[in-house]
Length: 211
Image 1: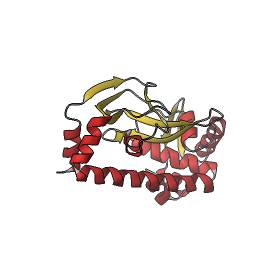
Image 2: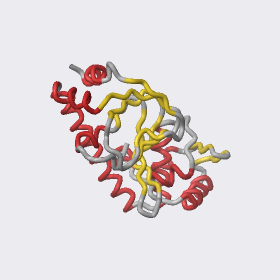
Image 3: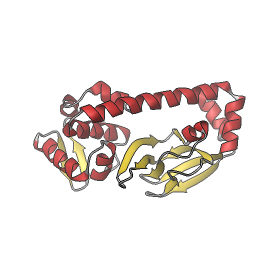
């Protein structure tokens, strides 16, 4: 059975829940109780450092599953899932998900591949963050965010949290990119004027591999 069919079957008797921007789906440290399928909206996975600094680890868009890693690992959520915009999610109990995985080896293989891809992205992103200058990281983040959801008004703080920087530093970097004619800022809105110019500041293959 195709993976989409398996997901549809697993979520056949799911509960549809609606969340507003800023609502939490689950919190870091909670025990996993459910599996979530994002039908509409955008969700950010956040982790807080011991100093209280917020880090945006990754983003989920419509059609993606979240919460599965902690269930499979049988450990507490390692991060907090927060709605970046209004969302609709299908929710099934952990027991139903585990039963579905047990009955369908294809679903188990799909989840293993998904986890392997997540690990690769995390490893590559760690290298990019370590080796790249702030300007390159901001450029890469803009390309990623705009490619993921061009209509969303990404905040300077969201950009900073994703590229392992601080909001004042990102504001300065955006000013430099605007000065070079690569972007345009209108209030909160950031428009890309030259995708090629932003790509020239960083490694396109590294950007693609972190998506």
